[in-house]
Image 1: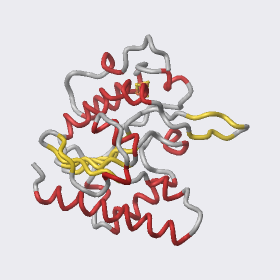
Image 2: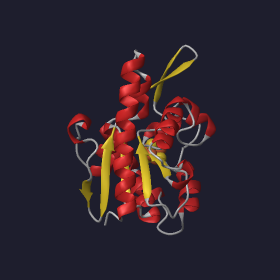
Image 3: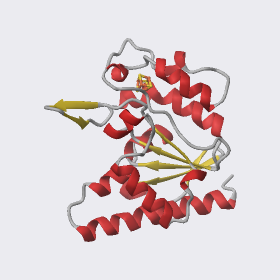
Amino acid sequence: MDRERPGAQEWVPGDGGVARLREAVQGCRGCELWRDATQAVFGDGPADVRLMLVGEQPGDREDLAGEPFVGPAGGILDRALEAAGIDRDQVYLTNAVKHFRFEERGKRRIHRKPDVPHIEACHPWLDAELERIDPAVVVCLGATAARAVLGRAVKIGEERGAPLGLGDRVAVVTVHPSSILRLRDRAGRDAALDGLVDDLRVAAAAARAGAR
Ligand code: SF4
C-alpha cells in the first residue's frame, strides 16, 4: 500500500447521483490497486432500493466485465437471492474495494484479499453509495465487507444472521458466496448455501419491516 496516498476522498464528487460516482471512480488513485486492474468496478442496481449488498472486491471476471458479481461467486449469490425470495433487480450490489487485487501466476490472476489500508482508502466510495442509495438494510458478504460497513473486525460465525444497528439502518452479516465455492464436498456446500439463504431472509424481512 502506498501510504502517502490520501485515500479516495479527493476523487469522490460531492454531488450528483450514482452515475456520476460510477464515472468518477475510474479516475481514482486513492491507493495503488488501480495500476494493475483493468478498470474500477462500481456498484450496480436501482438507486431507490431498500437493500444493499456489499461484497469484498471484484474478481477476475468482474474486473474484465466492469460489473459486480458476474463471475462464479455471482452465480452462487443469484441462487441464494432467488431461494430467499429476493429479486436481484431490486437490490444494489457493490464491493468494499472497487479495484481487483491479484497476483499473477503464469497466465492466471489469483485473487488477493485486500488489506485493511485498501478497505479504508476505498471507504469514501462506499460511504458515497450509502448516502446516494440510502438503503434501510445493508448485507455484508464476508469479513472484508463487514469491516468496511461496520468499521471494526467482525467474526462472521459469531455475528451472522442477526440485525445489527448501523445508525438509522440495519446491517446483516453473512458469508461471502466465494467461501461456498471453496468447499469441497457437496453436503458442505449445500449447508453453507442454506445458511446464506437464511441470512438473506433475515435481511429481506428487516427491509420489509422498515428497519428504521
Ligand atoms: S481500490 Fe478504491 S481507493 Fe484504491 S484506487 Fe481503486 S477506487 Fe481508489
